[in-house]
Image 1 (cartoon, rainbow, N blue to C red):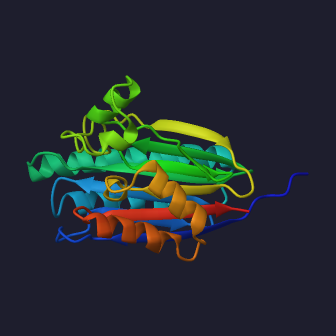
Image 2 (image 1 turned 180 degrees about the vertical axis):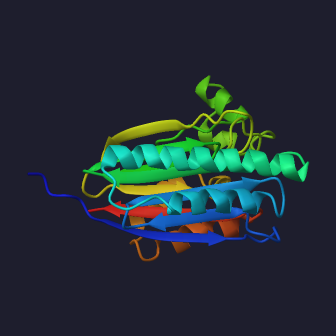
Length: 240
């Protein structure tokens, strides 16, 4: 029988140098092996409401679910948050309220991730970084068509224009990726407050060089030193 991997994590969120309110929300449920980053949009009292609601809804998942049930429950919780946010926006009679999200779940030495928007999931394996998610954004379409690179996309004038988010539109379409987890794998969940200041090489260097106890602080420092014009959220998860 294959031994079950164990997971350690480090999670940090920071308001940044410019924003008055942190509209990001992070969630770690180590007993469930679930981690989540949500990045709110719509301004104070809207963006932070949306991101916090997503995190709180996922945090309420019941214990003891089988992996397949837990995966379905995770997706359903994000969908439930979407429906609540849509209703709240209608009641407030205002424009967009929503949040991007990326959620990671581990079970039986496998991972599954759901996402909407431009919050990202990376994996460092054998010293090499790979972006496991694909942004739902205007510039992502340019990257996928080969016109620009992901690093160039962060400097594009439309880099903040996302095409999908929780709470936006009638239907929520979550993308999903799944795969096997190997000992030594390191996963990074983050909001775009980090990636707008970090190239793939910068992320790879920091993830390779720093232990779990300090890696999140190093990533935060990278974004803050780069300008810190947005909220910054990072969660690093190690498999062993």
